[in-house]
Image (cartoon, rainbow, N blue to C red; front, top):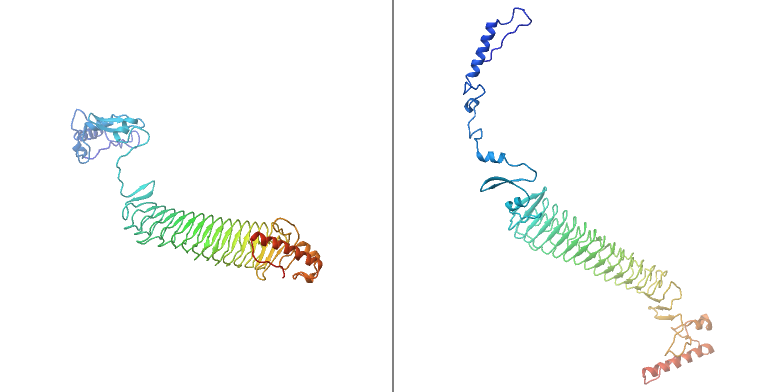
Length: 449
C-alpha cells in the first residue's frame, strides 16, 4: 500500500478537509503498513537484512572479531598495523622497523633485494638488466633500443637511445651518445647534454662537457669542456678547454688545450696550448703553438713553432717559422724565420728567412741574420778567447766601430789598404790564431789570405 495523506483542507472550517474518522482511518492504515515490515513487532525500528535486500558475504560484510580488533587500534601518528601471534597490534619506531625487517636505525637496510624490468621513482623510468647482461638505464627512452648490448650505463632522457648491441659504454646526459650503436661499439664515455650525440660507431672515446663532440664521429678521442670539438669529425684528437677545437671538422691527431684554442681547422698533428692559441689554424700541419694567443691568426701554415704570449700572432699562412718569446714575430706572416727573445722582431712584417736575437723590440737586434744570403750581423762587440774586446769588422761580421770607420761602399767588403780595416783584420787574425791553438789545429787559418 502506498502512503495515505490526510486532507487538512485549504483553510480553517472550509468544509473541504477529511473528517476526524477518515483522518484516523488513514493513520491506522499507515501504521499497519509499517508494522508489517518489522521483524519484531515490539520494536518497530527492527528490520531484517532480507527486508533491506542484503545478502551477507555477497553485498554486506559479516561480523568479524579481527575487524573489531583493528577498529580498536590506536591511530596515533607513526603507528603501523602489524599482525602478531596474539592478534593485531599498533607499532611504531624501532619496534615497527624490526617487524618490517628494515633494521632499527633511521637508514633502512635491505638484504638481497632484486629489482628487474621497468620501474619508476618520482616519475623517472628505471630499467635494469635490459639487453644483454649488466645494463642499466635511467630516464625517458634511455637505452630504448638495447637488445644484446652488455655492461652499458645510460642515464638521461634518450641517452644511448639507439644502442642495440654495443658493450661497456657510458652515456650520461640528455641525448648523450644518442645514435651510438653497433656490435663493435665499445669503451665510450659520453657525459654532458648531447655529448657525442652523433657518434654512431666510434670506439674508446671519452667526451665530457655540454655539447662536447656533438657531431664527432671518430675513434680514440678525448674531448673535455663546453663545446670542445663540437663539430669535429676526425679521430685521435685530444681537445681540452671551453670550445677548444669547437669548429674543427676532419682534423685528426691534434692535441689542443685552452679556451678557444685551435677553434677551427682541418689540419693534423698540431700541438696547441693556451687560450686562443692557433685559433684559426686551418689546414696547417705539425705546428706547435704554446702561449696565450700564440699564432692566433694562423691560417694554413705548416711546421711552425711559436712559443710565448702572442708569439707569431699574425703568422697567417707562413711556414717553418720559429718564434720564441713574448710577442716574438708578432706581426710577421713570412716563412722560414727564427726570432728569439722578448719582442724579438715584433714589428717586422712580410719578411722571410731572417734570424733575429733580441730582448726588446729594436731595429738593431743583437744578432741579425739572413738565411737566404747567407749572412749574419752582430750589432755588438765580439769577444774571442775572453782576452780582448776589440771590435771586429769583416765580411759577414759587422761591429759598431766598423760602421763608423768604413764608408758606405765598404759596408760589405773589407777594404785592404785602409789602415783601419787592415788593423781590424790583423787583430782578427791574431784571435783566429789563438783559437787555432786552443783547438789544436795543425794547419794555419787565414783571414782573407
